[in-house]
Amino acid sequence: MMKNKQDRDVFKKTRLSNIQETLVILFGEIRGRHYFGKAEAVLENELKNVDDRGSKAIGRHLRTSILPGYACYRALVECGVYWEVAYAVVEEEISAAALRMATISELLRSLPFAYPLFKLLIIPALKRGYPKEGWTIKWRECSGKRIYFHITSCLYCEELLKRDALELCPAFCHSDHVAYDPLAPRILFCRKWTLAAGNEICDFYFKNGKTANKKIKNSEVKGYRLM
Image 1: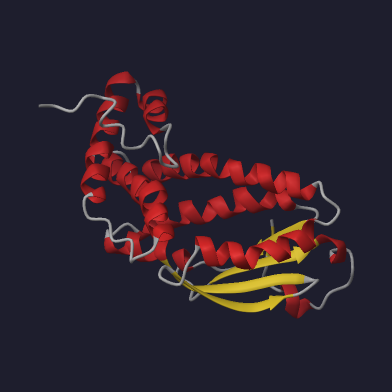
Image 2: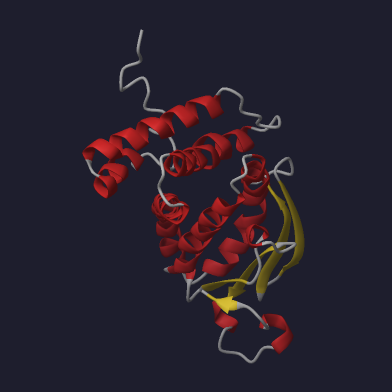
């Protein structure tokens, strides 16, 4: 017996929950629904053998973000869509999903004690949401002036590399900027390197905005792009 549409809505609870509508808008009713059906098939197959590494957090990242993004990307490319277009579609959907965090950042920005609160919350948040089973995080500093850490291994890179789709990973990295840029000017998010771009680390640098107008050493920000 064929599954009905409701049963097959495997994207419904993912970060790409609106992907069907997006594909129809971009490619038209017939092709859009065809591409969506292909993406559903890829995702359904991927979900059969999810390796969550014994972590609920890893499972959430895989089921709601990595695999849906990959499934959409793979389906579009296999249907003959240029990979650059497929990439852009996924990046836009992931960025749209990150707007929820962006809204929280905007609320935090409105508070005079935004940086101290962010500093208090970020370590437990990382431990809970980005466990050691999927990420290696090396702390450099967590002070009143800056929060700075490196990620030397990443679940997203590893899982996409397994599927020969590492080129898709920057689309997920971009969502960090969508989420954290609205913290400015209370907190300034800066980044120079990412694993997805072929570097040895992903660096996360959050600067206390209250010190932004003070003179700082060149070595502290050399090569960084203030977002």
